[in-house]
Every structure is written in structure tokens, then in C-alpha cells.
Image (cartoon, rainbow, N blue to C red; front, side, top):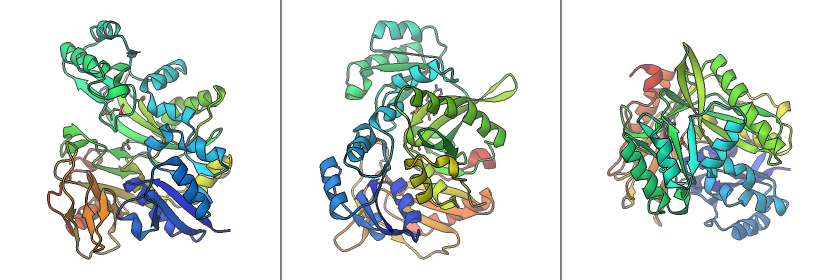
Length: 426
Ligand code: AMP
Ligand code: GLY
């Protein structure tokens, strides 16, 4: 039987998954809920985020498999809801999703498991937190406990700034309920990696490490964003470092999740800071996410040799250990083009012009776009689209991504010109 697959979400991550599933002969029809103006071209958009409406559509369209892309529906329990209605779903349970939806829970759990992570205190008491802040040397990291769409982390340059942000979060002014509990952390100096494990609750496989670029502007300047570009594989994570991350961070976390009765089935995404300690590269866990990264997914998907469908179904069926995950021996670089006022405010929708380009360079992934009645694709969201370059070398893959970008334009378009600079030295 061929699969009818529903992908939940509306970003570039979901488009990228759709792009590889569309080419899988075992897939009949693809649906997106709610999808974006670009996913129209890959399948059918179902314009809803309501759980009961999603279930109704699954029944109506004979959907055989659901893949949940973003964190929000996971933290609202969509995976449990669909499982309870006998739907095959790829995405962790509400209990397992707490690894992302509560930083306080995650920090307590990984500390108990003896995993290396920044020294911290979590509390809802301003006096206790202030006392802890004074034991640290600035910069000091202040984090809202709950989900804040990537905006809940502040790097304070002084004790007083850290205390001011802590108070603002605890008052509910900064992030509402998500900030009613605060995590204070020591600042870790190093370089970041994004690592991805696919787990069936018991066993897991690892994908190659990626590097994201969180800051808005080239040279790692400007405010934090959801991510302005990514590349994989990265020479900054050799086999032995990935093995360390696997053994010291991923395996013990999945183990403790299983032992405490909330086995993790899905994508466990570790945000890692690699620090130099005693002349050795030592990975520290910054955060867990319970889904693919965006834009990391956009560089991983085109390099999968083992089909995404096999990865997903083996995880759901508890058979991930039977799967050998192979990657195509190439590099992928994704450069995000964002709208004028991202990440501060939304910009009015504007038309996107795309000129023909050589498809051997790579492809475009659509994210914050809508479709006008005329059929025209409009830039309507913060991160609008990505140029994904593919090649046998990292340098060429990046050149290809920027070559594709030359063929795209919309009013107010912004992108970084230095994606992969840590690996390429510029
Ligand atoms: P998080 O959402 O926890 O990954 O934090 C967002 C970003 O803040 C990370 O990608 C890092 O760049 C930075 N960050 C978070 N925690 C720390 C830390 N303890 N030390 C240094 N940078 C941090
Ligand atoms: N790119 C980081 C994230 O998806 O959270």
C-alpha cells in the first residue's frame, strides 16, 4: 500500500521534508497542515492547526502517516492525541517533549544523568536567582523556562543586567507564562553544533552534525534569530567528537527518558557548545529540541541516501536498530533570505522574482511565503526562503547556494554572506 502522508507545520523544514518524500515511489499523496505558499506545489495544504480538524482530515483523506515538524504542536500534545486515535505519528509524546518545552526540567534531568552542561540554577524566586547570579562572572545567561520561539535567551553583560532581565521575565512582562520560571547559566565559550538523533524509544541513529548561524548579520553580529543558514557535514565535528556527543550526551538522555517511563520516539536535537578543556574538545549540552532544526533540516534532507520514509517508519515501529543510515557524499549549504524587518516585526507581503538557474547547483526551499489568488508566490513571513547549494566540496556548495541567491529577489530581502565561515575561514 502506498502512503498518504501529512506533514504538520508551515516552514522551510516541512517543505524540505516534503521535497524528499514527494520523490519516494512509495508515497501516493502529500498533505501539509497548514503548509505554506510553496508546499502547494508539493501536495495539498489543509489550512488548520486545530487537533480535531487535523484528525478529521486524516480520516477524510485516508492519511496513513503523520510527521510533526515544529515544537508547538508537540508541546500541545498532538502526538498523544493522534496516537490515541490509532494514527501512525512521528513525533515525541507530550511527556518526552518537555525536554524542549521546559528548560528547567531538561537541566535538572541532564544534571541528574551526569551530562556535561552549563552550571545553572532554575527557580521562580528572584532572591535565590540573584544570589546565584552574583556567584557567576559575566557574561551571564538568562533563560525563560518555556517556549519563546527562540527569543527566550539573553546573554547579560553584567550582574545588574542579568537581574533586571530575570525580574522582567518573572513578572510575566517579557514572555508571559513561559518566563514565570527562569534558568540562570554560566556562559560557555566555544563553538556550536547541532546534532540529530532519531530514536525509536530504545535505540537510535545519528545524522551528521550541522552548524547553524543564529545571528541576523554576517560575522555573527546582530540579534538572535531562528537561524540564518546552516551547512553539513562540518569539519568542526570529526568522528571522535560525534562519538563523544553520542556516548556522553545522547545515549544517557534517551536512557533516562526510557527508564522514567517517557521513552523518546522522534528526533532528538542537541544544541551543543564545544569547549576547549584540558587541551581537549569537550561537548557541553546547551539545549535539547524535540524535532528537526530549521534550517538544519533543509541541509540534511537532500543528503539522505537512506530515505526519510524508512527512517520515520523504523522509528515508529521500534526498529531503528535495523536501519543503516547512509548519507550521500556531498555537502549542503542553506542560506536563508529573510524579510526586511525580521526578527523585529512582520513586513507587508511582496512578490518574489525567481529567474531560471542551473538545477545542478541545488534548489530553493520555501518557508515564509503565501500564494496570491493570481498564483504568484509572495514573501509574507520572517524567514522567506532558502537557497540550498549542493556539491562535492563545502566551498563549492556554498558558492552554489550564493549563485542560486543571485537569481532571487524581493523587496527588503536580506541574507548573510558568510554561511559556513567557521569551517571555511571566511
Ligand atoms: P538555547 O535556546 O538554549 O540554545 O539558546 C540560544 C542560544 O543562546 C544558543 O544557541 C547559544 O548561542 C546561546 N546560549 C545559550 N546558552 C548558553 C550558554 N550557557 N553559554 C553561552 N551561550 C549560550
Ligand atoms: N535552528 C535552530 C532551531 O531550529 O531551533
